[in-house]
Length: 306
Image (cartoon, rainbow, N blue to C red; front, side, top):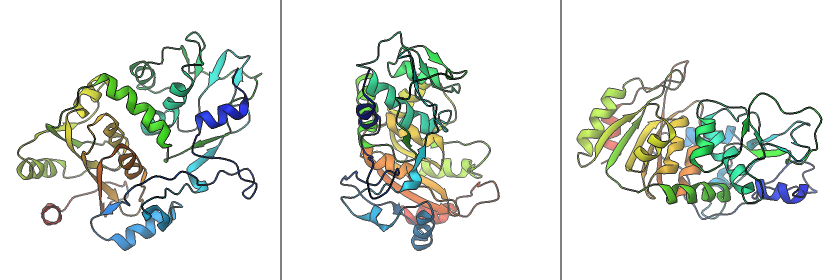
């Protein structure tokens, strides 16, 4: 079995324990990157970004800031049981973005050392097992509960919203081996419930007129294999802040990303993902209703993109 310290470094290669911070991880990952391109109301938006724990250091061209807020401390009992069950579950395991970018890569890191018959414990959503299988993880998946008596070998911290470059590169290597990239489509992402795009039809029509060389489609919900095929054709991705943006993982390098962001709840996790994938990211902060839903001013958008 892998020693505890080695497993910690393997699953979380960009964080470490410092004697100056007690048990909390600190920022260490350095990468060449661009700060978020904020199209309007930049000062207010940057103030709101800071509320999430990000400082202006995120705008430095060679620095990525990992504040303590972006990790979850695992509670006791997150374990490998009797050497026969690997526990990769944590609080956000059932959410698409967090599962795909933070949980799934852990299984890929362990794949060369983990026999295919060893079960993985992870609370599941409808996409979880299909995603494991698409990325080549064939181990049985247990989703009921982890065994009570257990040996603690899984690290106590998991990044949230800032997966390491190593994790994204590992996912990307699988994607590149399975899809054929094109740059023929524009994709408008649809959300249901919170953070809906209230004038989606107007935005879609604007995109068709502004970029007629592309085939424009609305992405709602598709199986992961169909999602991968669709996003592998993307040249532009447009949509509200939400899990659908995760699918830029399947797109050709250099895709133009435009994220509509509730200005009162500004979260830069998709900027982070876009930068690690080599995409061109822009954020349009918007006022929103009590549900976080937004309406895009088409005239303003047209002026910003000229």
